[in-house]
Amino acid sequence: MDVLGRYRNLIVLVGVLFAQILGLAVQVKHTTDSESTRLIRIWAVDSVTPLEKVLVWTQTSSRNIWHNYFYLRGVRAENRSLKAQIEQMSLERVRMSQDADQARRLQAILAFKEQFISQTKAAQVIGSSGSELSRSVYIDKGEHDGIKPDMAVITADGIVGKVLRVYGSTSQVLLIDDQTSGVGAILDKTRLQGILRGTSSGEVVLEKVMSDETVPAGEQVLTSGGDGIFPKGLLVGRVMKVASGGELFLNIRVRPAADLSKLEEVLVVTKIDEKQAQPDQGTSVRAIDILAERLPGVPSKTDNADTSAAPSNADSDGKPKPVTPQASATSGGPITAAASTDTKTFPKPTKAPVDPKPQPALQDTPH
Amino acid sequence: MAITYTSGEQVEVYRFSLPATILIPLTAIFIQAWLPLRFPFFSNFDLPLLVVIGFATARRSPLAGLITGGLIGIFQDALTHQPIGLYGISKTVVGFGASSLGIKLDVENTGARFLLTIFFYVMHEIVYFMIARGLVGLHMAWSWRHELVSGAANALLGVLVYMLLDHVKQRT
View 1 (cartoon, rainbow over the protein chains, first blue to last red):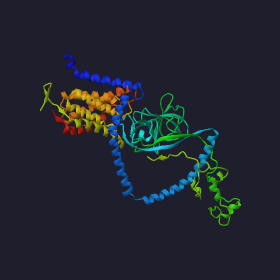
View 2: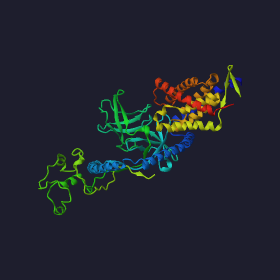
View 3: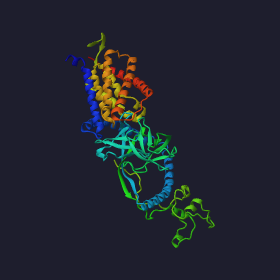
View 4: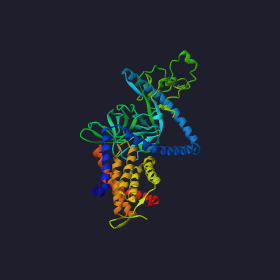
């Protein structure tokens, strides 16, 4: 009894450590959370996140008041510049829709299935795990908002991570730079596939690319869709440095496109549609059609009436102007990216191009 | 004024009120989770660890130290996606060690606090490293330089934290 009293502190220490090591071993064996560990996590998250939400809300509100009411200097100039950009982009869109149509036709021939992000949910990042060895963040949307584990989390710049755990009104997102994360990735130009992983120091590396391949620095890294979480084709980042790693594989360091250290708002991909590519039925306005409006040709009877409406490419004496190389290259069919890259040569369309097909674009649902 | 006598030296034992015992660790964990989002460099600090050391050295009770350390560590673990127990075990050891050492040493002056924090920070990282690699199978790299620099940075912050704790601790 005397010995027990003398070494009481040490015995308790050993007991507490033993219990924790035992608990740890059980958790490592069972990858999913048990009821007791889940309860501890819920208590911890519920006691920390409400205050984080209040702080983030206060911060966002005060910043919005400043930006929306007080700090409006230069808005007119910015508005003009944005309008010019919209005009420019609408022209570019015509060209790109041609490329997309062509791609769809080819995909339909090959019975390809496309993945569309059809629904996203905007969320605010409210907190982190607070540990360098657990690169994860908390967002202010949870089970009540339709968030489920393994949903992809992205920003406008690139992918961020995936939903790991979901609580009532918050969720934990595992970032792509965590060492336990893994994303199927593909290099944009060389089309080499690999697995994107984080490291303990917070770097992101592309693994499983054979050492006899050539990967240039600066090449874009996209999602390959192979992980079943991220749809194919989302931007991951750029190759920063390539070194010969082990015996078989290259050591490719990737700089994530999204700034993972300063995340504020993210989009959770709540719905991904998969459907077979359908070729366009030709209802959209093609860039070549718009270009043809300016080129002299044999006018049809109906065209005679309104030739003056469209801007003319002819001289005042009726002689045709020289056709640009881009135009001559594309006169035989749809414009491709290779054939014409200078969108400034296209005149502004007289009517907005109509494309009845849904585009694989982000649609933010109200939240 | 109650004074405990250990090895012939007079050592004062302090206690903390219940609200302080609950709110200070919670605040530390909250700041640790929130601040790195705004200031990423803050993830190099371990504010809950500094609170564990501060509590343990003031109370000078190994039992209270290990229990406080264990609970704060487990709470911290719960916010990560790693298994619960990594921080729990590390902080249990630190809590026990800091309170045991607090009985034997004068931990009231700034220099001693600074050195003590570096020592316990490195000890914490060693225990964490061993558990994470040996039991959980995480890939981790060890760098003495990084740990010592982080330890010094934490010790600087620790000196400020202990000064704040001095205001809320009460003599038993």
